[in-house]
Image (cartoon, rainbow, N blue to C red; front, side, top):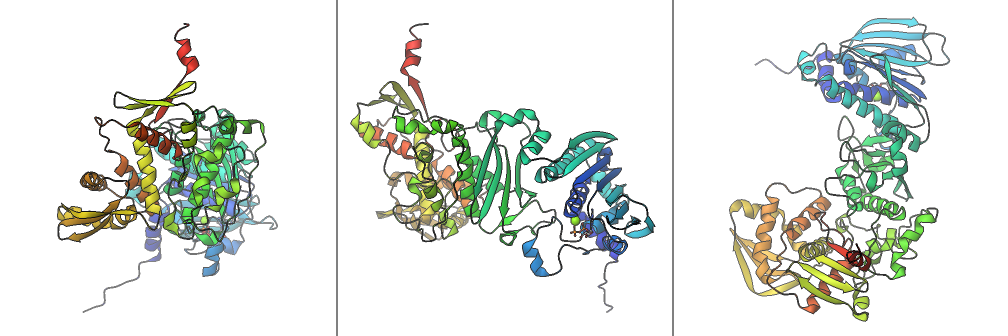
Length: 609
Ligand code: ADP
Ligand code: MG
């Protein structure tokens, strides 16, 4: 039989490749703006017509190209930015694939003028569907101008897939803003149908944020900064009261490149925990600098996703930095639990200039020693007179990834135990639902179920992160039967269940349990395992930390709290102590308030209306 494999003609190959790089007008904008930045431009204009469908033009005052380079630039895999494979690990430019111009030329009509500042004449090239139709010397300003017309003129199917002008324009402006935000030192213009809609003169990062998002945000910005061996973070977070429900500004700029990372977003989100309502999202503008060796931006052609080598450490540092920023600028809520002035000090930071500590990473740090992270990462770090910032970061050099949790271990001993014992506190349960604490000049009203959830959630997280969970051996094994599908699901969760302290084996459709975590009662096991399966049926996050968080939340969601069972005084005190020793007593893992207070003056006010 005849051989049937053939090489695709170049223009077909380019069209296929273009499909990955250029999805819509906004992708062209991104590529051209990034090329202009790579060409060291200090002023860049973007001109668009009909949301980029008719025209996208980018004019820069950068280094320009020689006549030969100008032709070469449109070849696939033609790039001046890397020469050998190793260069991929020390990238300081936006582009490196040499694909963008070839792709754009494959699916649009392109005209380019370019001149290097020292050359007398420049070059003008026209190219259509990869065919050069014009190539002559010309008079041109220094720098480069690309105009891209009739996007997808030769691929009607793709053209038809484009959305309405207003949607495409939104994408395009988003892209423009991302690049502009990452490069405040560059002057940007955006013209649409010949009117200027953005004029962003060069300035500092804060000015650029305000140019784009409006003056109102100015007073809402909290500066944050941190330098460690691993990572430098610098930028702004937004005070909780300035957050909007619509359109959120969430920017991670990693080595000056806008990226999306769900995991790092989660770090910021947890740092805001308790300060914002569930439907409100934090906003942030954070420059993150890491060694290019430690990231992989290669995983996606449009490069907004990114993989970090030290993701878990970066997570912890980021969360601490954001929390510190929030605490320092008075954004953390008052603990409001005691009149002890020692504990009310975070607010005295208000008038002091922020001092940002250098991070020390202790190479000998062993998280499993007793004096581990406990006293460092937790909420009380913000309430102590002299926060021990060194110890805050010492905990970050954990040797093995899996051992960091979302919320780091809280105090081993209770902060409030001695005080509660010392002083005359009385407690009682109201309506089987609230635990009321009468404390000096105020009443603290605790939602019992939510308090349980908070305590259990942190206990679960801790157990996921420790190597040797403590189990209680069962005298008689518990056998639970499941469908085959559920058994597969349980096998998938095997490691997590072991980490919690469950000891078990599978026998066909039966789960035989020989040991259980110490903080679970034997009669709760059936319920907990079945609940866990229910919650995991839909989806379980693959990332180990997101997964732990997900499991811990699903396991504590329906805590078994017997409403008819009265809590003894001792149990009441225990609950209070555990709650306030936890990292975040104010809110349940589901962002609901856990306790409230009623002060004596509030009560008095009711009598003197
Ligand atoms: P990449 O950016 O990945 O190198 P591109 O296809 O985007 O690939 O560009 C190819 C080459 O063309 C670049 O490496 C650069 O040398 C040159 N080039 C592109 N745009 C410009 C510009 N605005 N100014 C100067 N040179 C440019
Ligand atoms: Mg490029």
